[in-house]
Image (cartoon, rainbow, N blue to C red; front, side, top):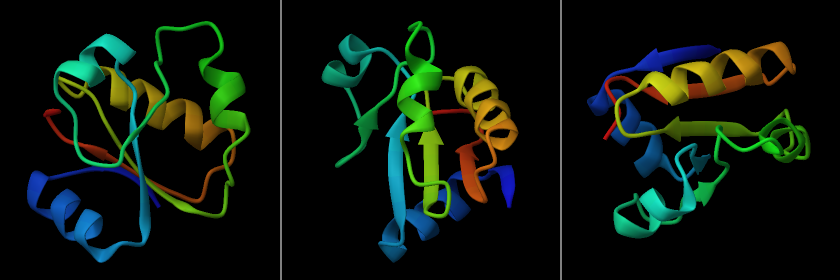
Length: 93
């Protein structure tokens, strides 16, 4: 399943412990404010696809950004790469 979900659904999935959390913002933004235990894969960097490609496509992922726009784009990229379960936080943080 690849889709955008509400903050409530996102938090439920995050609290389940079954998901890897990915912040698609810049390292600087992440350093200022981020969700606990999230990995940074900056979608604006040229190596974004390369970093994402190294992830296990069979694992479950939650992705987020500030407003939801970058995570929506990352969601599309991950879907095209064949990831099976990725959810984007609607509206961002």
